[in-house]
Amino acid sequence: MKISRRALLRGAGVAVALPFLDAMRPQRASAAPADPKRFVAFFVPNGTDPGAWHPRTAGPLSAEGLTPALVDMKGFAAEREWPAGDPIWSDVTMVSDVDHQVICSEIHSPAMALCAHTDGGGQSVPRKATLDQYLADHIAAETPYRSINVSPTGDTAVTQGFTSFRDGGQVEDAFRDPARLFDTLFSNLGDPSEGMDDIRRRRASVLDWVREDARRLNQRLGAADRARVEQHLESVFELEKQIQSTTQSSCTVPGEPPRGLDLHGKFKQMIDLGLLALTCDLTRVLVLQYSNSWGLDFAGYDLPDGVGDWSDHFISHKLGDRDRATDLDGLPQAEAMRIANARVVQTSRFKVRRFAYLLNAMKAATTATGNLLDESLVLYTSENGDGDSHGRKNMPIMLAGHVGGFQTGRAVRANNAPTGGLHCSIINYFGVELSKYGDPASGPIAGL
Picture 1 (tube, one colour):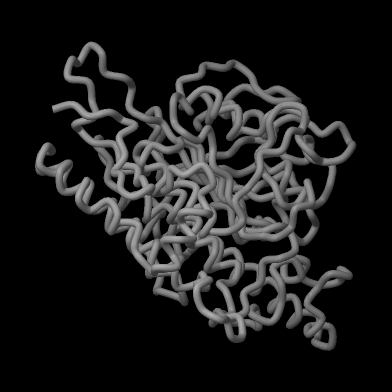
Picture 2 (cartoon, helix red, strand yellow):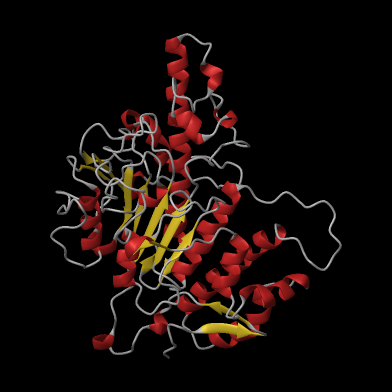
């Protein structure tokens, strides 16, 4: 039995996409398309402390050899909305010595984080397509969404609130509200807010509308596909419950507005929704921007060394900068520097744990050929390498996934190759053979 890859579960004006199933594969092997290849970019601001981040030597990674900023790759406990994480060190390849300073002339420009072409010393906005958009041209195929870009930051300045651009500096808009993203992805209405608001007023689940269609479909599927559909619908149901709990119903007289999710809670929901979109083959390109350069803080988290009292940006500057954590000003220099260094390690560890959540969720998302992480290449990056000095000559780059046979569990040195060398390597794994890429142009990084 063959069903369309664009098949939807429908009911009362609502449609829910299906994950990729065995039953969607062509029955004749000769007509079988290549399995989907997916790209995910994960952006965090303010770089790191390179000395506490990068592995000491190139070669295999090991749990015992992880640097202070990477120790949570061995696993970690739950914190607030984020569940405990399994080890990911064997799922990641660390890349050091990538030179992004020749690309981006401004000290803080998330807009340039996925760009490998110089801004020419002008406004730091990409003049050529960012990596995600270049790949979308080659791997989006007939997916409903060429790419999906999300960011919980409310900053809409072109250099701060966006990380995805087409040629000529054309910005790709970003979803900033998880509820709007949910409605767009999982409703087939022309205006996703209208019908979905009506559903919310009745406090009914989207899945209530499609259960009968799902029951009929399951009668036509094999055991493995039935399990995938059930897992997928359960994920949609759990996400909808989370979003409904933070979206006020319009059918009652409101009292004092409830406090909504903060940046972290929104970002987690956006990760979950983005991964559902990948699993359903609604898109094959996902860009996740945690924050702009200024808005990330850690209030509400039980972190040591006073990290919760300051923004990530102020912590990144350690001592002596105008934008710094001033509570260290009266301490002896050595003690102040010890605490300042420890804080940057803590914020770097926090960001690694969020990346680990993404990778673990991708491993848990089953597909017809394995899991989502196996079918993807995931890039972790920032706008700066050294958050204190704003240096961009040694960027905090991580790669994960196995598209094109990519190998993880290792550390690779780029030997000061420009960002184009990193992007050339990534693009080649998607089957687009390039000898050079970027401006300044570079071939793929040796050994990557």
